[in-house]
Amino acid sequence: MESEIRLMKGNEALAHAMIRYGADGYFGYPITPQSEVLETLEAEMPWETTGMVVLQAESEVAAINMVYAGAGCGKAVCTSSSSPGMSLMQEGVSYIAAAELPALLINCMRGGPGLGTIQPSQADYFQTTKGGGHGDYHLIALAPSSVQEMCDFVALGWDLAFKYRNPAIILADGIVGQMMEKVVLPEQRSRRTQEEVRKQCPWAVTGKKNRKRNVITSLELEAPAMEKINNHLQAKYKEIEANEVRYEALNTEDCDYLLVAFGSMARICEKVMELARKQGLKAGLLRPITLWPFPAAAIAEAAKKAKGILVVELSAGQMIEDVKLAVNCNVEVRHYGRLGGVVPNPDEVLDALKGMIK
Image (cartoon, one colour):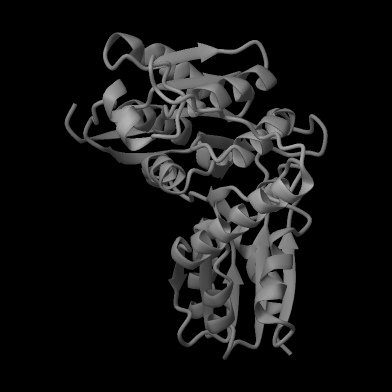
């Protein structure tokens, strides 16, 4: 398939991007508002065209362990879910990170805590950027704000996951998953042959006879050995932090007030910035694209001349903690957010921004 332009939902774009990446397998379980991912894969039937395995597991726990197994074989495998389902997966995610396996996870966030609502939220930021499961580990976290980025981040997420042998996650929210936009789908990649997998992933379990046995595990019973593993992981995370920070900065060079937002809230804040500037208020926007590694240095630089920072989230305030750490109390940082799936309009956010003016 050549590249083509289509009108589709963000969740549908994820599915098409998986197929065109040459993915080996998807294992998932339906939950609103991301069910279209599995539904689209089932409708496209890639097992007949590319050989991609698509399986609806019996639960989210089963799905993440299928990903664990597939990743251990060096395969490009993926799962997707929404907030409560991702909570069920956390033990498996921790195992995958400890075993240093490449895998792509997708969370289309909904309101919580608990089963909550099927409306959009961004309240899984802590779960994603602080690990989520047990132990000291990180996920490479990409936050799309458009349907095009939902598509593009599939390839980027897998490429980064294989580069660093670390799980990557696309952290979207229900708005980005459900909205429809024009998207340019990439050309079809071929799935890697088993010989290519062996060459590119010499650590993987391949099943070939007369080869040195590879053992994939997250278990180490001796404390000194486990500390050595942890130190190795921390060194890898520092390398990722040094090389993989991504963000978008708009009108940050001359802004008096800086907006910081990701995903759908960044789109709303673009309008807020536009309205503010029409009213003579110099507002800028910094949108983290990688939530981890977090663009702390870019925010600190943008905040040098700012009189205040407004962090806008669909949560009670989670990313604001990283923003405060980035600016180190050198400027006032306030939070504006709505809860339970309520989405603010630009005028609400603009009023909150004006409330910072002294």
